Length: 125
Image 1 (tube, helix red, strand yellow):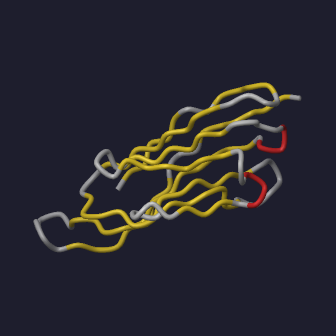
Image 2 (cartoon, helix red, strand yellow; image 1 turned 180 degrees about the horizontal axis):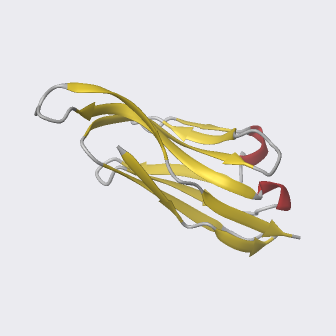
């Protein structure tokens, strides 16, 4: 299962960006989808996650500013980022886990956990 992220860019402090991440491949079902970020010299950290039922979880640092959503028909997760701050700068990675259909079968499945390629977000003061 492949994830393709898009929507990063450079904005000034207080600006907005919307990230998208589409999952493709032999997908049987997707459970959780989420966004993580990594600033230079730092470890990758959770930004937000969303279950297939729509339950969300956010890092304290983004609560009230970021909104995660998903389209289960398009297998796509979004991250609307408002009131951006310089400390939001980093590479944003999407993640998804679920079940994939095995090649050579129409019904046999196995777990997957996939990461997107990362998209750069730069916020200047």
